[in-house]
Image (cartoon, rainbow, N blue to C red; front, side, top):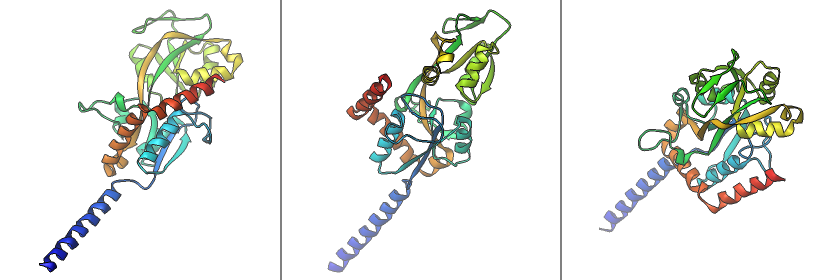
Length: 275
């Protein structure tokens, strides 16, 4: 009988060790996330490849805290948005943010989905507004929040390269012209090569705040052209290897955003922006 008990204990130990090994394999050793090299306050601050140490941005700290809660180190790398999409598609990144939903992107990445199989806004990083910017005093179209009615033959609206708003504008009857940054788009707007410039509100407002000679010549019009949730998306390969971890990461984002700690971060960046 003692031999039988010892044998049972031995088998249980083997099972526990095997289960632990499987669980360890279901979690990556480290995470590599990419994001854009253009400032988007308060979500990510600074420009270029540098990641600020003290105040990197609300979304950066959200993801750092989420990774910490799941006991997984995370490293960030900044790059142009279109390159980030390509790197995710080629599995050079585990994840990329912040991405709105596009069917074309879903073909090579994974979004957090609801039980209905649709993108789950409760697990999004944030909601952002795309606004239209025009040359001051020169609105060449009517926009009521539903339809664009152009008043001249110039129907070209500028966007940043690779941004999802391009497909929305085309559905509204606009022509779309891409450029790599706000400076190039606003310069084209001022010299009347564009009828408008559509971009994320936080990015353009920050650029204009730092560029008085452009701020004096440009105005923003309401209502927004589009309001969208934005997500952390994982590569196909990463999700295939770690599906449970990916789902847990999105779940933890949602939980942390409801916490007092996240509210404190929001207040911190709101105060930083008003200084």
